[in-house]
Amino acid sequence: MTYLLPIGGEWLQTETTDTIRLPYDDSPIAEVPQGNPALVDRAVSAARAAAAILENWTNYQRAELLDRIAALLRRDRTGFANAVSSETGKPITEARAEVDRGLQTLLASSIAARELHGEVVPIDAAPTGAGRLAMTIRQPLGVIGIITPFNFPLNLTLHKLGPALAGGNAVVHKPSEQTPLSALMLARIVQEAGAPAGAYNVVTGPGETVGSALVESPGVDMITFTGSVPVGRAIRARAGLKKVTLELGGNGAVIIEPDADLDAAVPRVVQGGYGYSGQSCISVQRVYVHESIAANFRDRLVAAVEKLNVGHPAEETSQIASLITVQAAERVEQWTRQAAQAGAKILTGGDRTRATIRPGILTEVPEDSRFMREELFGPLVAVNAYRDLDRAIELVNGTSYGLQAGIYTQHLQRAFQAAQKIRAGGVLINDVPTFRADLMPYGGTKESGLGREGPRYAVQEMTEPKLICWHA
Ligand code: NAD
Image (cartoon, rainbow, N blue to C red):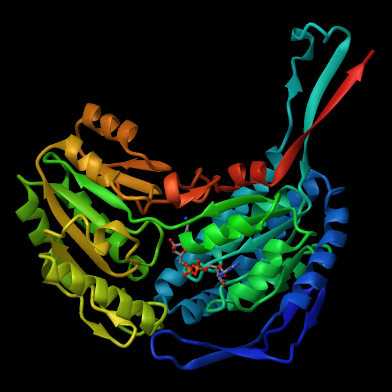
């Protein structure tokens, strides 16, 4: 397939191209045009023209457009799943699941468009309000710049594009340089679905040049970013007066109380800790298990993790493939070694072949190690024992992140004690932090982010209220 840059309804070739490679074995899979700051300017102008059209579309028209995009994504499910699997290196079964999640995100966006409304303001409750009637309507911001990471290239894009279109905005998208293929394919179906030319423009290329140009462009009204904390900081510092929302990293923790149902917890920790080799912002990285059941839990987890199939991402049976790059795998290997040197015990796995790390479990991991404090983004989980629930909650809260956390217990009071005290955007009772339904409010506290996604919430961020006040 030939990939071209969709800008203003045209499909552009560029002088320079980038080779996209399968992370599992580094084999070339596609050549994509490489964007540059001049193309960002062109895309922003095209988006401004499209925004002037979209702002006059009714909620009904926007919702119908989103439904048509969803129908085309369903039609092309296999092609999208293959593209997502090849660019990310995630197992094909997980890539299909991502496309299916994307359909849910589009459905929730179409509902968000249908439900978008302002409110009646009780203006006559003010001393000066007599004889007046007031209301707000929601208006689009205009042009939304979206910047996405490598790990869920399709669904995270739809979490921004869907609500942007629902609110009547146009978009310029800078995808991850490692995973631009599904975004370029998405632009084809957005056009086929009947979006105005320039409603969704994609400019590929490096974050430092193309991403920065988008962040600094005076024609952009809002930047919505998903990615790492350092890049999030840099974006916020350079965005000036633009609205900015940030979905950043995490180091997800789950508490396992003595009364936990381990038959339920163990398989969920496996899914949450090792899905896409742990390269999810809400991956299970830290397990705090009560000391009375710690040995039993560890034995069961080791047995389950050792059964995971490691292999080529295109194989139906593969559950673990590679990390996104060899460098990423080397970093995970290094943090694991450092934790072991500081006293952690490796119960299984952790060894590396090229970009692939064998799924691993560590225990007695020092709380001040990078393995515990930072975002690991690899297929290893720390299992540390605790005695007292308050202490476990303190440990969960003890890092700079706060995206989601989980607690397993049958005890209602303890569950809600944890839910109230844990500082995170979401607390899952009897589940791992990795649970996300695409319609729910999702985002982080502390350094995990700013603002909320989930189409119903994101559409609020991407529109603003306008007051209309009538005087008799
Ligand atoms: P990254 O921060 O390295 O890159 C993300 C995007 O930012 C890429 O498109 C990149 O090109 C761009 N970028 C880089 N420098 C830039 C700059 N100076 N200006 C503008 N754009 C720039 O992240 P990554 O390695 O692709 O993804 C992994 C990270 O994403 C992890 O930290 C993970 O937790 C986070 N993430 C968060 C969520 C969430 O919802 N909270 C979801 C998925 C991933």
